[in-house]
Every structure is written in C-alpha cells, then in structure tokens.
Amino acid sequence: MNLSRREFSKSLFLTGLGCAAGLGPVRKIKAADPNIKAGTGIIDVHTHIGTYTDPKKNLSPEALLSWMDEFQIEKSVVMPLTSPESTKYLQTTESVLAAAKAYPDRIIPFCSVDPRTTHAGSVKALVGMIQAWVDQGAKGFGEHKVGLDFDDPLMMRVYEACQEVGIPLLFHIDNIRGKDVPGLKRLENALKTFPELNFIGHGPGWWASISGGLTPKELGGYPTSKVKPGGAIDDLMTRYPNIYGDLSAGSGANAISRDMVFGQEFLVRRQDRILFGTDYLAPGQQVPQFELFQKIEIPDAVRTKIYRENAIKLLKLT
Image 1 (cartoon, rainbow, N blue to C red):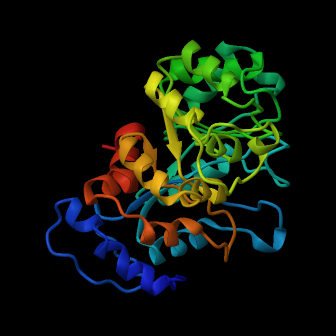
Image 2: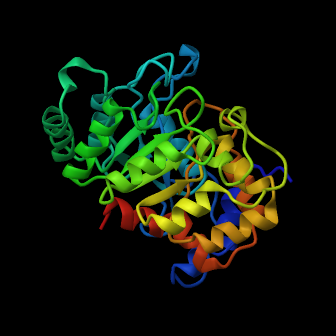
C-alpha cells in the first residue's frame, strides 16, 4: 500500500494518535496544514538540515518545516554530522542551533563534536563544549557517527562528558561508524560504564541486532529473514535501563517489517523505550516509516508513546 502524503496526513489521526492522547474527537486535516495543534503531532527524533551527499539537494530549515507540516510532525530533532565518515558535507552544531533559534517551537537542536578533534582532547574540555551548547538550547548529543570502535577510549570520553552534562546521546552503529561485533559487546561496555547516560540506538548495526545469529557482515546491512531468538537489542534492554531505540531510516523500518509479528510484539514489549524517527535529510526523500505505521497493529496508547510521549520524557521537553 503506497499512501500519498494527503492520505497519510488524514489517516495518521484516524489510527489513534489524537484519541490516545486524550484530545477528544479526531478532526480530518489537509496535507501541509501548517497549524498543527500543540500536543497532537508526532515528534521526530532524527532529522538533518544542510547537504548530505548531493549539493543539489540541500535541505533548508524552511523546507524541513514544510515537510513536517505535510506529515503532522509537530517537532523534529535536528542533528549535526561532524565526523568525516558520517557525511560528504559536514553539518555543524552552530547551524543547527541557529535553525532552532529561528524556529524554537518546531526544531529541537542536538549538538555534536568528533572525539578526535584536537581541542576536545579531554573530558573536561568536552564537558565545557557540550555544556555551552546545552546553554544555547541543545537537548542531546548526536548524531554520534564516528569511524572508531564504539568503546574506543576517545568515544568513551564523549560518553563520560555527556553523562556529566546530563543529556542523552544518539548513536549510529555499523561496520564503519561506531564499529561493534555481533551481540553489541562494545555498546554493552559503554552502557555499563556510564549507567546514568541514556543512549539512543540507530543504524544498521543496531537494528540488525533485533535478531540473534548475526554475522559480522550483517551488522552493516539490512537482513530480510525472520527474526531469530537471542537478539542483542532485547537482551540489552532487559539488562540496561539506559538504552533506547530510534526507529528512523531504512534500518529501523526494516527491523520491524522484516518479521511483522515479532516487530509488533517488540514495539509493545519495549513501548517505553522506542522513539519515532525518520532520518529525513534531503528534499524528496522517501520515508518508509509512514507506510510502516499504517500497517502496524498496536494499541493506541503504545502508538502515542512511540510517536511523542517517550521523546518528551527522555528529552525533557516539558
């Protein structure tokens, strides 16, 4: 089923978001309705602005907001990309903070710095940098997408600094950035070392780990087979309360759709620690999360937690 933007915009509220939030009768809305009632729309925890790989597809803050209006996204987390392995064109924290200053009711800024940056060579220096960005409105650190092992000493400095400042960190794992092994043992090392830091998982390596029996190669891909028992995500979420999941990108959508029965049960089981995200980063980009959430059969209360309530709590938006 391929929904048009107008069809999705109408059906979003008919699938329970408005009623589950206790907002009374659901109203039918037009696509690109710019007047999203506060407290009713989705909170998208993963977007970007600027240029990713194609300079002809630069995404301005205004273009992002227009897209958000079409899909009833009330607020979006916008994240910089500051490591050379993360993008062809770096996106700075300063540009994200400027966009959030211009649109404070719609854009939630995150901050980021590559841990190999020379002026970020100590935890104390990192704390100073991150705290300065938090003082300007940053609500989290990310996208943390660096070409090092996930628990490399330089990476662990970042985690220590974020824990000290008191903001969550959204990371990317695959075979190139935030490198780990099947079972996510390097991530587990970080989780247990920094128990007061809330980590938010994203990327092929994270979402492939919804299944057990992975090969190292599969950490960098999008497995399509049925989910096997023993997945690292469920295991880590059982043992560590400081790990969350961001459903964005093809990796997040694939993790649920590859085995829809398991995926729906997983969303219900982990309903307090799953966040809606898209990874929207270029004009015209296809976003599989919208079609996926038309197919998912989960209680309205669970849907509302994923769409907005978990993000509000985790990012301290109230």
